Length: 159
Image 1: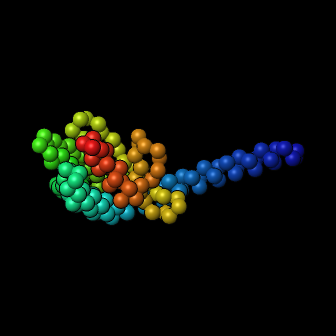
Image 2: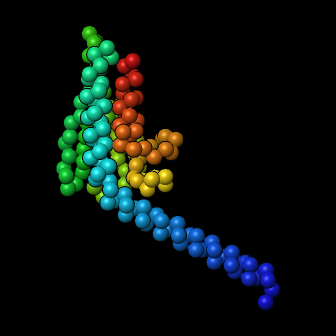
């Protein structure tokens, strides 16, 4: 048999093996996200509350923030992050975060109709899960980074 035929056959086997490995990796990542998303959500809410507390402790910003939880634990996690400008002309905005238990993303809605998703993914550098914004740079965010990603645009609109 000609050597080139063996080379083609080997190349096809290698290509199929790589495709199978990618598929297995995707399945494993999905299982990891399903298992760890509840803890990520819990940490995200803690970080959002910490950001809200930090903003409220800076009187020179004239901004306060709050986090309210209206979750249905077996169905959907729901949190509203509200930012208030506390000047003589007060104003407020918010972002609603919604995560259905069976989904691999967090829906984010603002009052001006700008909705976006934060998609769960596995970080290759640490094998931990995180989220990335569909409209962002593709960076996978820790809960603290995600809290900043969510709150900072609301704060900056008042500064």
